[in-house]
Image 1 (tube, one colour):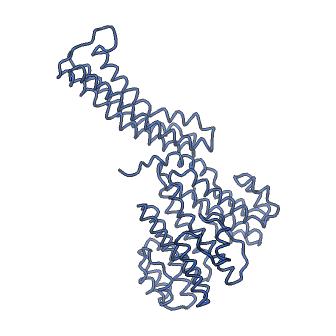
Image 2: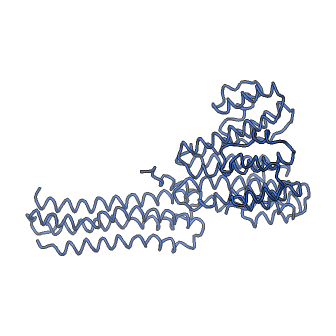
Image 3: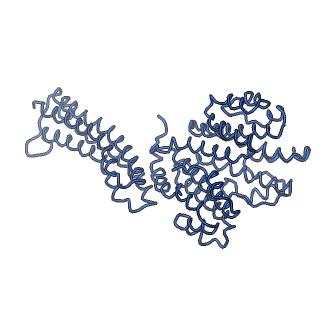
Length: 334
Length: 157
């Protein structure tokens, strides 16, 4: 007999209530139509962000508010989940993100504070490990990745290895985790994320004019689109890329997103469509009454919400036209 | 075992299994409801109604058990009967419909009601529809109780 799925009853019941407080499309429309960043922020005072907004001294500080919100959401879901370990792989992405930022700051001297305090490893611990070159306190897979980045960089001085090694480790771990826990749902999610990352890599490598060998090295092996098929597309014109992928489930995304990227040179449409694609996948499991799906879906919904708020506020602060902001807003999960 | 003992085992069977079904069902809805009420305490009344729905199987089981006990004479003024083994088995068989259907339908009704808690979270005005879905499961517990009662009344003692 499978694990009694009604262990999720409490957490899903709670998530149902939380879902009603997510910002809907209408709220984002009002933010977009606001006259300024400050005005857009005011729209949030009628939501769960109210307390955080009133504490904000300056609209430019909104990142703190967003990362705090994300952190709270992850902590809450982890607390109420009957199997908190199933949420852990979702935070691994943030550990990897934080490590990337730290390594880039160290090797390239880029100063940034774009950390997310969401990961499973404490930020101070990560910071200490990278600055002291002492990775003993990191969990196994991150430790190995960090050590090999360090070694590789000292020899080759190529900052690309940071993203490369860390992404490979991340997705390998995610797939291993999903298989170990027999979660078809999580594996499906991760495989789709890998496919989308690979598509993105393909277009990037194509645009940079790099060769097959390089692409072979950077593609993630666990996706559902076979790597050699993607590699064979590197010298093909746009139309054949679209034709080659029109039987895959990413057909419309490639047709719309990749086309715009290759023709106009902006990836923003593609990025939006990939996020919407994952939202679409997660929405399929949203209404399960006793399952992990609604919990994972809610966290994704929060990530999208935070992303949307960021897009609107950055757009408003930089006085982008409303249309340009609207184009980039992700579909909400509701 | 004497016939009377077998008949009483049937009573225990009906009360026990149907009661387990209800306990599990009510338990599931209670968990869903507690999750919702943590965030939205105003929904207590509506979710309580949903939680009560899978409780009926236990009552049906008790009713069937009560009827058997009465016929056998464990309760009431009449003296306790000395039943033939075959008659004892007849009582036992009669308890099976409500025992088994009560167990399974209680659990499933709990799952439907638990899902309906999610419905109430989003659309409290649609509580009625959630109840209707759960009551559809109830039908089969009622039919099983009916079968058990008809069987019990058909036994000559």
